[in-house]
Image (cartoon, rainbow, N blue to C red):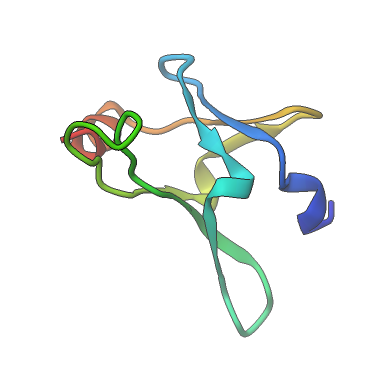
Length: 86
């Protein structure tokens, strides 16, 4: 799969079915030695600029369960999900 094909896919949490973000709005951490993707960083956001800004959420590449035609399904532990929402 090419990186350009990941661009518009939504990231969905397997644990709660929540839409977490879109790959095109995130950053990728890539190993310079071999070009492998280490993780996806979803930027924290607030609701239309109001309220408290969430911290960035780091999703390890190993947490990806499957990549489908329209979405990427990830499985994060409850502790990681709750910690990122504080």
